[in-house]
Every structure is written in structure tokens, then in C-alpha cells.
Amino acid sequence: MSGIYIHIPFCKSKCSYCDFYSVAHSSKKSSFIEALLLEIEQKKLQLADNKIRTIYFGGGTPSQLIPKDIVLILDEIRKNYNTTYLEEITFEANPEDLNIDYLSALIDIGINRISIGIQSLDDELLKFLRRRHSAKDAIICVENARKVGFKNISIDLIYGIPGLSNQLWNNTLNFVFDMGVEHLSAYHLGIEPKTLLYKQLTQGDFNVLDDDISFRQYCDLVEISGQRGVLQYEISNFAKTGFMSKHNSSYWNRTEYLGFGPSAHSFYENKRSYNIASISEYCEKVVSNQNYFETEILTKSNVLNEIIMLSLRTVEGLNLTSIEKLFGSEHANLIKSSLSKINTAFFQFDNNTIRLSSQGMFVSDDIIERLIGAFETSS
Image (cartoon, rainbow, N blue to C red; front, side):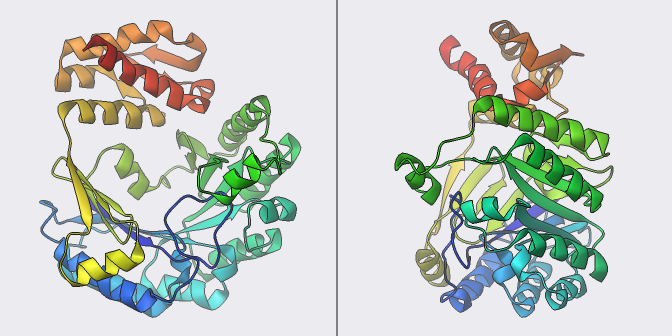
């Protein structure tokens, strides 16, 4: 079964760290909805298996949509795809948008999983990140989500923020677990080019947090989550039993999915496609039936690299028996031999499976790059 991702590109304002495609206005919302509905219909034949298991509204800020818009989108999906097997509809939202009426409308529409972008429970850090809500707003919206009937609540937090002490981070984790959330996505603050945060850093407005402090915060994240029964299943994701994100897990398992909206990605028939990252061009080209996405046919090498990268993000790890079956013993042996060049504190190797330790998870990009690089140097 497959998934559907819908990229909603609107935001009230741009957060200082965000490098996802979005626009800080909604003047083109009507045109966007029209084009989005057309794209949903146009791509219905791209999935050989038309059975949809998950739908995910991401962005941007999906909570910039009014309930009527969400209904139109879901109705178009149901009209063009087989949603008999649909299990999970996730909706990303910001705390300032989530009043009781809006949350109740989401429940009535059929949204059964909500992902709330809290990021921090400290008002000064929220200002630094240019978030529009306060810590109090965040707490109230989680309480209201529970009050209207949400039984699957996920929140986002960020660590490694300049000014975030270890004690404040630990207090934040314990507080959100006391609220009973089922799922936590926690990310280290990234400072990407073309973001306001990058500009501020180059101007000397702040200093990045020391790596040792960031690593301590990651270790505390893993430890406290485990103690509270919210178990790690991927580098940045933690869940109570039965509440792992089905949609995001499909990405790491390389399950086919279609992405709709400007900048959205898709994966189907051993191809990856990428929609144009411009709302104006997206709307114009979809409506006029021009090409609005690029497609890449994956080579054997691409697939191998993806499996290494995605598998090592998860606690299940990379199984070399599977690699041998898919690509041959030479590739499995090359991965195994390259482990000798990696610090043993970063991974465990048993039952022919490589699993990254907490320390390894923290530096996973470097480890993955080394394993993938082993094939390039051997060719």
C-alpha cells in the first residue's frame, strides 16, 4: 500500500531556521487549491497499487487552510484513489492556529493524527526561532487537542538551540511527557544557507551551541524518552507502543508515495520526482498541463545508497543478509570491511546487522557518507 503527501506552502511568517519551501502570504491560495486538485487527479495512474494507507498534510503550515479546503482535498483523493485501507491522516499545525473550533473541525473531517510544531517551551527561545506562539499557547493547544478527541498527538521539539541549557531541555522533555503525548519528533537545530538564522550567524549575532552540549541533549533525549515509555524508532522520532508514524515509516522503508503541491517529492516505479518549488509556476503549469516536475530513474547504485542511508536512520539498522540477497556478497562484504575504519563506539554489529549507537546516531551523516563512499573508492 502507498502514501500521499500534500505540501501546503503557506505560512504567516518565516521561522528563522526554516529552509522548506513556503511563502509568507496566502494571496494565491485559491489558485493553489485549484492546481492541487488537478494534480491529484492527473497523477492517479502513477501508482500501480492504488491502495492508500496514509495521508500527510505538511508544509509550510497546513493549519493555514480552512476546513472547507481540507474537505475538498480529501474528497478529491477519495475520488481518484482507493482509500478503503486508509489508516492514518496526519495534519501538521502551529499552536496559534489550534483553537477549539478548528481542532473540532479536524476531528469531524477525519484527521486522526495531529502533529503540533511546538519547538520549545521557553518564550525567549521561541522568539529567537521567530515562532509566533508562546509556551502557554503550546500547552493549551495540546490540552485542547486531547479535549476534542485526538488520541494520537505528536509534537515537534528542537534541541541544540543557543541558550538552551541541559536542565531546561530535560524539564521540557519531562513536561511534554507528563502531558501524555503519543509521539515526539525532536531535531537538532540546523542552520541552513538562505535562512535568516544563517544570515544572523554570519553577522555574528549569536554563537552555535557547543557540540558537547548538543550531544548531551541528544543523549538525554534518548534516555528520558525511554524512561517515559516513548521509545526511539528513528534518529529523530520517538513513540509509545503502537504510535509510530505510519506515513514517515514508509519513507524509511522505501514504500511508494505521491507528493502533491509545489516542491513535493514522489517515489514510485523506481523513480523519484520533484515538483517545481514555486507556487506561481506550479499553479500555471498544472492548470495548462505543462510539465511541472523533474523525474530521476534510480540506478542500482542509487537504490543501494538509499537503503544504507534510510536503514541506518532507524533502530532496526542495516541488515547485510538483505544487502547480499539484493546486490550480491561483494557489496555486503565491502560494507562490513568498511566498518573497521569506524569507531566501534558508534555502532553495534550482531546478527549480520549494523545498528548505530546513540553516539553514532548523533554523527550518522558522517558514518553513512563513509559507508556509501566505500563503493565509490572501490569502483
